[in-house]
Image 1 (cartoon, rainbow, N blue to C red):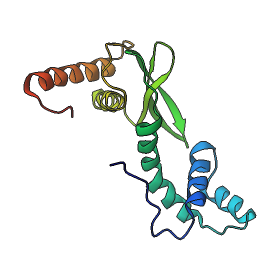
Image 2: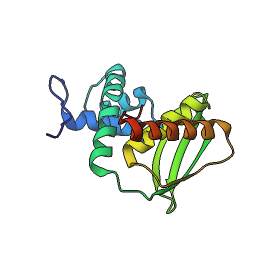
Image 3: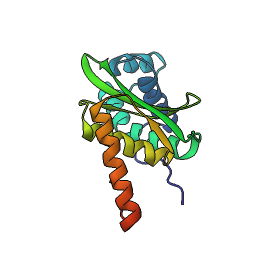
Image 4: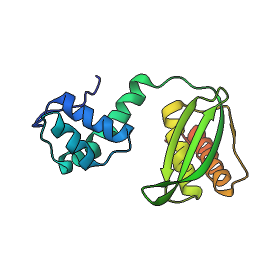
Length: 164
């Protein structure tokens, strides 16, 4: 049975909610900018309501997209991380691409350590399956994270446990 994103008990129409969530995610707009844009279109919605919609519906929309629209990726991955500034705060962007350059997955983290690298690999494997080969840079954190995943995979196959 397929899960459907529910808009039950919302005071606004589904199309309006999806539109403002898309605007916030896709463009560099504040909640107040979107509130003003909607008011220009004759729709009165408060910026705090937009914030609640983004917080609630963004993960649901991501899961729906990954389940129904994610393309198959190659079995050879290239993984790295870089740091980027988001709203004045530095974060690490973990990312993996296949040999054709198609994005496999990405993740933002406040830290660059084994735990973050392992969390990224768990997320990427969960969405795209196990790769045959992973190429990484000389980062100790990435190497430790990959080794931890490999150890868990060995335990998984020997004991039939789940990947955590």
